[in-house]
Image (tube, rainbow, N blue to C red; front, side, top):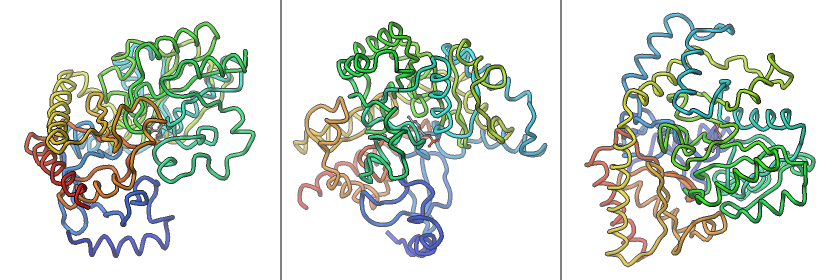
Length: 431
Ligand SMILES: *Cc1c(COP(=O)(O)O)cnc(C)c1O
C-alpha cells in the first residue's frame, strides 16, 4: 500500500496541529503507524490521497448511516446554501427539525439544537442540575459523553486508548461532583445514591455503550435504573449521541423500552454536519433560557446548513423505516461470517453487536462491562487493524470503538470484509 502523499501531509500537519489531528481518535496512536489522509468518500468507501480505496466501518465515527455523501443530503445542502449559511435568527427549518425529532423519539417533547454531542451532554447535565437544584451526577466507567471537564473521568474510547482516564486541566472540584458507577451493575448505583442522599441531580448513561466498544445495558439493569431515578427524583439522561437513529428509529430507548427524562443526540442527527441536540420532558426543557433561568446558547445553533442536512437524514429515516431491517440484515450477515471464521480458526473472541454497531474484542469470554472490555489485548487489535487495512478494510484505529455498517455496504463489501477478517486472524496466529 503506497502512502507517500499521506506521509508527506502528516509531516506537514504535525507542525501546526497537535499530532496532526483535530480529534485524538483519528491518530493511529494506539495501533501504531501514522494516519491516512482522506480525499473523498462515496457510499461504503473512502479514498485516501494516494488513491487507495477502502471499505470502511467508521462512518465519520457514527453519522453516516447511509454511507458517504448520499445524494438526498447533498441536494438538501445545495438548495439551502443559495440563501446564505446563517442568520442568527429563527428559521422555519428549525421547527420542522424539532417536530420531526419529537415524532421519531416520543420522549422528546421539546428540544434544543446545539453544534456537537459534547454541547448536548454538557447542556443536559446543566438542565438536570438546574431543574433539581442538586449538583452531583453519576456516570458509568467506560461511557463517553464528550469532552466537558466533568465527563473526563474514566471516559472510555479516546481517553481510554490514550491512557488518560482523567485529563490534566480538569479541576478537583469538577471531578468531585462526578460519581462513577459500574456499567450493568445496579448495586454500584445504589451504593452511590445512599452515600450521596439527596445530592444527585442526574444519572447519565449510554443505553447501548459504544465508547468502551459495544456493550448493551441489560434489561433488568436499565429497568431498575429507571425506577431508582424516579424514587430519588434523579433526572435520567440517555446519551444517545451514538445510538440515536442508529440502533432504531427511536434510538436505544425504543429497543430497551425505557423512557428517559432527557436525551442527547449528535452524529446521525446532523447528517454529516456538526450538530447535536438535547431534549425531553417539557417540564425540564421549559426551564432553559430564555423561557426559564438555565442558561444555554449558541451562535450557530440550528443554522440552515446543519438543519438541512440533519432534516434530510431524519426525513429519510421517517420515510424509509425499512432502513433498520436492512441494516440488521447486513450486520447479521457480517456477524455470522466473522463467527464462522472464529469457528474454523478455533477462536473464541467476544463479538458484541446491537443492530449496525458492533465490536470485536480481542478477549475470550463475555464483555458486559468496562472491566470485561479492558481485558482485551489491544496490541493484538493493533496488528489486526493493520492486517485489515492492507486488505482494503478501514476499521477504527482503536480497540474500544464500534464498527458501523451503513445502508451503502453491499454484499460484496461484506464478503470482502469477512474474507479479510479470516486472513488477518490466520496471520495473527502465526506472528
Ligand atoms: C461522540 C459522542 C459524544 C460526543 O460528541 P461530539 O460531537 O464528538 O462532541 C458524546 N456522547 C456519546 C455517546 C458519543 O458517542
